[in-house]
Amino acid sequence: MPSIFSRIVKGELPCASVYQDEQTMAFMDINPASKGHVLVICKAEYPRLLDVPSELLAAVAETTQKVARAIMQALQPEGFNVLQNDGAAAGQVVFHYHVHIIPRWTDDGVRPFGRPGSADPAELETIAAQIRAHL
Image (tube, rainbow, N blue to C red):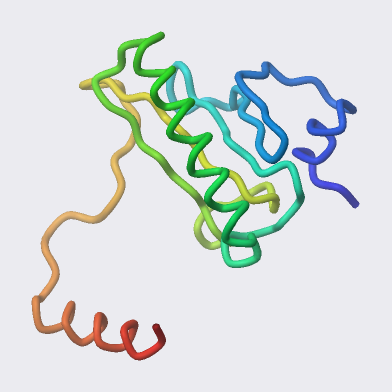
């Protein structure tokens, strides 16, 4: 069954479109974290980041940058978050690769990411070594 985003791409469901080209599309999130929250998708349906071919991933990144620039000019936020939730444990709800652009203002009430405190440097180096071994 096609994802809700594939149905938007096909014109079967409405959206507030911001931008589209041959490979990507950007539209307003219907459950925005902040004013101007936009989703950028690849038109082809790939469930997760690791499934997306690198050339299509590059196209999504280019569209993300283009739309983020437009958001900055149009809404003049103080900054923005670019976020991609990958997998249910990370909060992914629609399994069609997409990126969130979330405009931010001081004291906007949007929850920050991360946990309080800092990590042990030795633990960070151990984890980094584990990751490097797979590159």
